[in-house]
Image 1: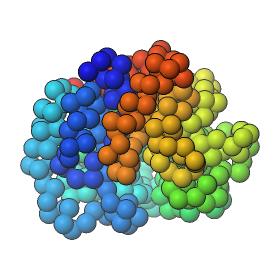
Image 2: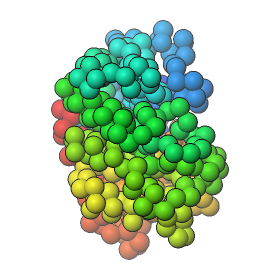
Image 3: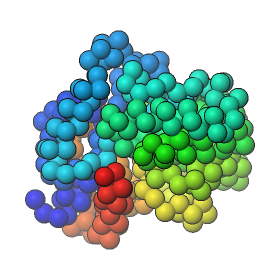
Image 4: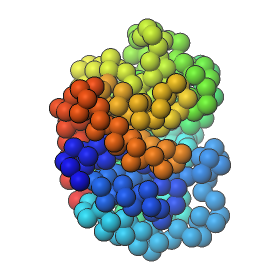
Length: 337
């Protein structure tokens, strides 16, 4: 296994729907994979609740055994991620303490909300997770069927306060955090997973809702997830996960120096008419560091990694860009120890 191939595997974040690794995940870890996301079923995602069968099966001991096995296959430490949202999915439901409901969390003073987030985060960390794909920093100003009811608050000030409390509580528990979904989706036409969904706002209109993103960055969020929809502020409209301009704004204007993550690369609004492999190369070229692969894409991990290697060898992707992305992943992995 060449160093180039190991870098290509290192920048991929496949979703694992159960605690058991199949052959695709096992090969991924053996070939240099450094990250896994413990996901949920579509029904669990929509309802925000884990199934009764999962709750019975995924005990703390089951989590500990699974993570020990995964690390052994990888031959070292891993970024192990899960959702732990106040207003959406809490993947460690039944293992970690509950997070407060959205309305209750909005009414809590910062210190009280921080403590509630700490107590939930402590259980998440004790299970073996070291990165949460939370908190959500989007603020809605209009229709959005994807995020309706799944954001922290409807105004930047309240959302900023809640983001600060969440990150402080998670950090006290030893958890790294991820802000999502930059540059925000205040208004969204369509659903990005299944439609050619667009955000019909100017850059200034988007910028007006960035308070919670800036608060989270200032508080020390480890990662930022780019949005999957296409943004009409740029022409031709481009998905956040593929936008060099938006990633440059995140780095330059908001001064974010951590790991930039994509949303699912096979969301319709992101992938368009490309293959997942082509989308992976495009996201890396745009400046993303860690590429999220849905369960549908997981069987093709090897093909995607090979396409990244071929893009470097063929001059379509700068080697320095891949090295920079892999370096960001390695640095965050080191922080999980």
